[in-house]
Image 1 (tube, rainbow, N blue to C red):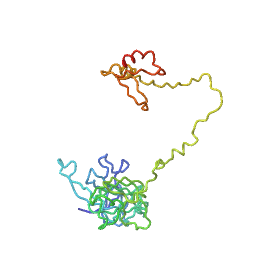
Image 2 (image 1 turned 180 degrees about the vertical axis):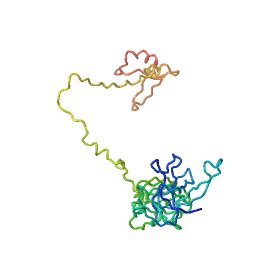
Image 3 (image 1 turned 120 degrees about the vertical axis):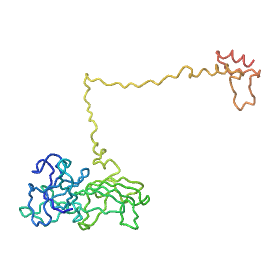
Image 4 (image 1 turned 180 degrees about the horizontal axis):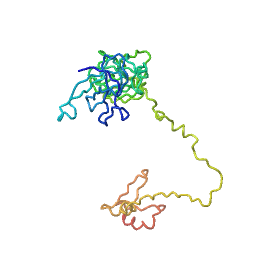
Length: 317
């Protein structure tokens, strides 16, 4: 394996070494020992990325390792070509690992057409914990496949509160918070309150110190209750135009009960019972009882409706 320095990389059709979409990711390289490298995009020294399903393309001035492998025409020609692995972790910086001693033809440190690591000087690498698998972008993005850790045996983090050691957690972060009290290469943990945006997929963890933007609709960037104040329709005393027709609100009628559910006249129900009963009761203050065998006559001031007189006489004898 041979270490070399990247000069440029094929990313689109504007590069002189573009040979179709299959050439995307190809790097133009030079020997590592050269002190001054010009951005010669026409150099014959090229190498393809070793992996095809995970892309980690270097930027100019980063170091990669070359390894030889078969060309796509190997079965007919038997030829091989170089593939690269890397970039190498020379500086331990997630943004760039180029060695800043190489200049372009203008005497400037060349890193690409628009990639400038000075703008990313405050991006720091994530602090790892036992068993973690992390992916870090150059611009402060990261994905951590981690777990609840033993806070007594490792650095404190804000997700190892609650649950059991080893409970899985996945943290997706877009944009790293700035901590002016730490050095550039000092390791950093995710901060749910200060990172630009993030997603925490928890399993029994309790995030320490989490501060929601709002518990109301203000967390969505607006207050609908305040915004709607004064939006009521304005009414005037002008006469309504004769052409305007008002809508009439029609209410659905209550459903009528089935015929068999309608209660019959109570006296009719009583007359149909197997055992005859008295059709009336008396006040509890009266010291007497009335039953079907009672032959007492009603008082003269008790008026019996005409439609029930015959029934009462029949029942009372």
